[in-house]
Length: 350
Ligand SMILES: *Cc1c(COP(=O)(O)O)cnc(C)c1O
Image (cartoon, rainbow, N blue to C red):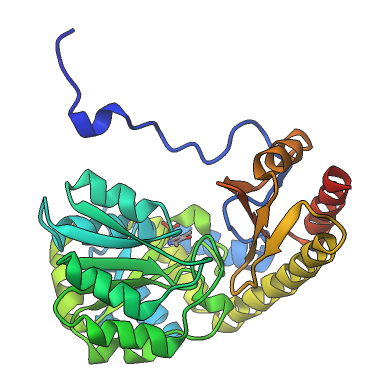
């Protein structure tokens, strides 16, 4: 054996979202609700009529029309991807050159730096203060680093905090000569989207996903929303058949039911409120929870005295959450799942 793996691959390990089995999964920010029977039926029927011997539509025309109507934008502004993950990878590899600088903020979604690394981009990390983003300081930082690209999530995964609409617009306006990517994976749970302003800029890409509020992580479907000029560039750069026919048809069914999608989101938010209140109440009774961050998303982020201990104790009880440094990120489950989580937490922290 003489083949040597490239240096950048040597220290990589496969992504392991979850170790062991968990009966309550609050670790991946998914929706706790599976689609109802009537929707499954409609999905099954649409899958049944696929021309399986043919390649899918490379541009997801019909899907993009429906999704664009849902978000109130022009279909020409959308590009569909195999999850927003694929689109993040695509953007980083085509809108930067090896050795150039991309700026990420910290804490934020770890996949940005991961994909940047895979294409040889130099990543500079702008630290937030107490989870809060100082937009003017970030603007200075990006300019000093001579960055070609800035990517961040808003609301933020994992802090669940959100920078205001005006702040984000200010940031975009202040950085006209590099690509700004704003990942709004969780914006359906909040308000403050800059969706209605996207068309004013030729250097801004928004990211949306079906994995969170829409509750369809299994189908792997995400979108970029941008000025059509950027959308055309992205369509040219992507692999031709990146979204398979089953995902396209399921997506079409979903976006044909906008009211259902909005109701789902509200239903998740009601559960999230219960979770947040429960954790907040607990924090008043124990020194072990140092801080519960306000939440703009479907999860609750809290700083702990000893996050690892609590994480492991929850795991022993079959409850999966995310442990990030000395913080826990706990996604809402159903009411019943939240009750189990809260009772277990109370027990662990007594
Ligand atoms: C979950 C998540 C996504 C969604 O990724 P998909 O590949 O569409 O499932 C994107 N960005 C952030 C910040 C997320 O937390």
